[in-house]
Length: 49
Image (cartoon, rainbow, N blue to C red; front, side, top):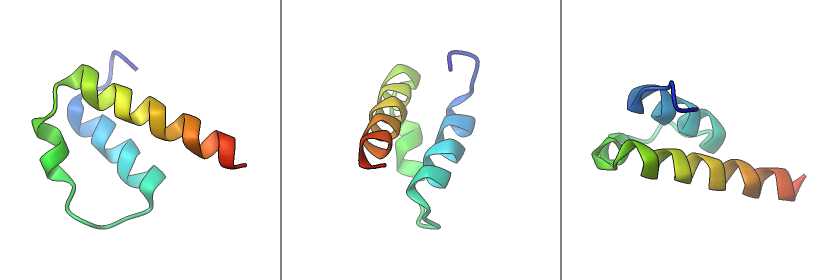
């Protein structure tokens, strides 16, 4: 995931969250923090399956 831009990471998060809400505030996070959030969300979703 290191090759993704912050905008691309946010796009993936939006798809995972299935929301149209304005989440642009997440772009204020450092790229590594945004990546950590994405990984944690994916892990949570996988556990729910």
